[in-house]
Length: 229
Image 1 (cartoon, helix red, strand yellow):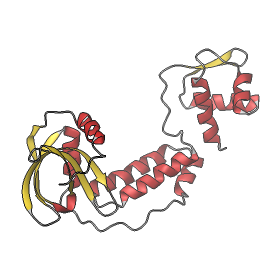
Image 2 (cartoon, rainbow, N blue to C red):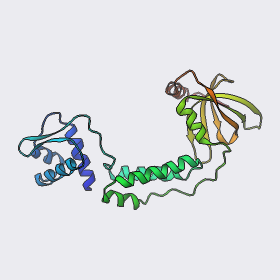
Image 3 (cartoon, helix red, strand yellow):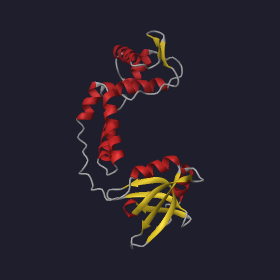
Image 4 (tube, rainbow, N blue to C red):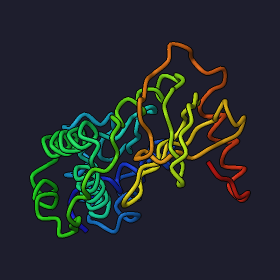
C-alpha cells in the first residue's frame, strides 16, 4: 500500500467514528504501528484535515470535511488518466482541451509519489477518430446545461431531410458517432440524432418546459422499447 492510500484509509477510518477514538484502535484497524499512525495524523493535519485530539486522548475528524484532490488510490489515478486521455482524443475540440487542462490541474496538486504514478501510467488510448460531425458539439452541451431548445435540419439513414426542434438532455459518445438524445417536438417522443446527420444547428431562445433530469429519467425507463428517428 502506498503512503497516499494509507492516508486515505486513515481519513475513511476516522469518518466511521463519531466520537474520539484512541490512536491504538486506529493503528490496529489500519494494520500499522502506533508511531506510523501519529506521523500520518500529523501529515493530514498539516495538509488541512480538521483532526482534533492528541496521543492518549483520542482523535476525531470534524464533520463536513471534504477530501482534498490529492487523495487518490492507484486505481483512481489510472481511471482519471485513462478517461482524460480518451476525452482528449475526441473530435470535440473544447472538451478535448478541457480534459488536458483538468489532468494538468490534478497533477499540479498531487504529491510527488502520485504525480509520478500519473506520468508513468501504462493505460493507453488508441489513435483518435477522424472528426465526422459537422456541428459544434460544444453548442449541444451548452444547450443541455441551460435546458435550451435546439433547432436543426436532420437527415435520416435514407437521406430524407426534415426540420426538427428538440429538447436535448444527453449526449452519447461512441467510437465512431456522437448521438444527441432529446425529446422531439415533431415526433412528440424521445429520439436519438446522430451528430453527423445534423446541419444548420442553432440554439433557440426558448427554454424547454421540463427539467433535463426528469427527461433523462423518463427516457431511461423507455430504453427497452425499440425506437427510431
